[in-house]
Amino acid sequence: MVAAPDPRDWPAVLAAADGTTVDLHMWGGSTEINTFVDEVYGPALAELGVRLNRVPVADTADAVNTVLGELEAGRTDPGSGAIDLIWLNGENFATMRQADALLATGWAEHLPNAALVDWDDPAVAFDAGRPVAFTTSPWGSAQFQFVADTARTPAQELPRSYAELSVWIRERPGRFTYPAPPAFHGTRFLTQWFHELDGDSDAWVEEFDEDRYTEVAGELFALLEELAPALWRGGVTYPNEIADLDRLFANGEVDLTFTQLPAGIGANIDAGVLPATARPFVFDTGTIGDHHYLAIPLNAADAAAAMVFADLVLDPALQAAKLDPVNGWGDGIAISPDRLDAGQRAAIDAVTAGLGDEAVPPAELEAVRTSNPLAELTIRLEADWDRRIRQGRGG
Image (cartoon, rainbow, N blue to C red; front, side, top):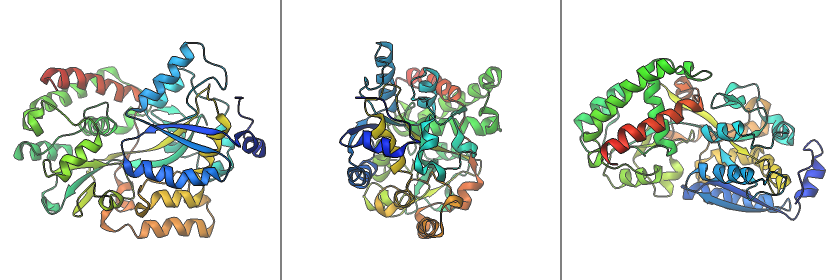
């Protein structure tokens, strides 16, 4: 195994990647996403001479810790690691960046399809409050949404803020829960509630204010402790991940679940994960939107193959396919429509126009979109949730 060539010499990258396998470590909790990766990217990658080995992980932090453990053990040379590529964002990116565990050659800027990315957009250029600095390459975008079953809960009865949700939970004991942090959707749910109580989500993008955190977090966790007995199973236990919450929702045990998919829940409905009458909605007080990325560890065995995969997923046709729920995912795009030719943009516009009421309209999502906060905020919230809620109630 050798280090990847400079991506500015793309023929050399393709030559180095030919005949290799890219080991992609990614969250494996969605059957629909897993199938899309295997059946769409796998064959397209094979045409470029690279085999895809998707390695599912329960928590992205497991892959990050593998890399950090290798580096600590002295396996720092290019080609000496077990992981070629990691799907990550947020605090996992921050952890790797702080540990200098990422391939830091500015490689992402020089991929052929990187010209389609708006690197000046802060939502792309910053992740968890830190500059990406071309150490990771965007794969897609997402925004947190709630999901209700219209057959059970009419739209006029849905909460549109966390303040209203607090009342809603009390009025429907046992009918609501959320994944236990650090599960991604649970942490995001918690962070948004913190933002609403604080009143200024932008204040947590660049700088951590200890005194302000103590005040707002104290209010948040006191409220969560108060509401816990009114949650599913009395707040003694919580779903481990979003798939568990989806099952409770589909089985009629709880009345709300979550999604991160800007293109809506059509794929989840088609797959039978959610009922046909499920519909997404957002709170008026804001929902966190961000990008997710592909990261190459410093010691990746097949960094050239990893670059080929990262470039492939930015292809406009594949970005449009990923956006379309008919293909099983419905993930947001990572490229800028303004940088596409007329045909490429028309393909994406056609997907957006056909989403229907199984998706929140893009303009409505944009109107309530807030920034992804500092990793320090989510890390502290997860730790305090574990101490105050999980340990406090034996969950």
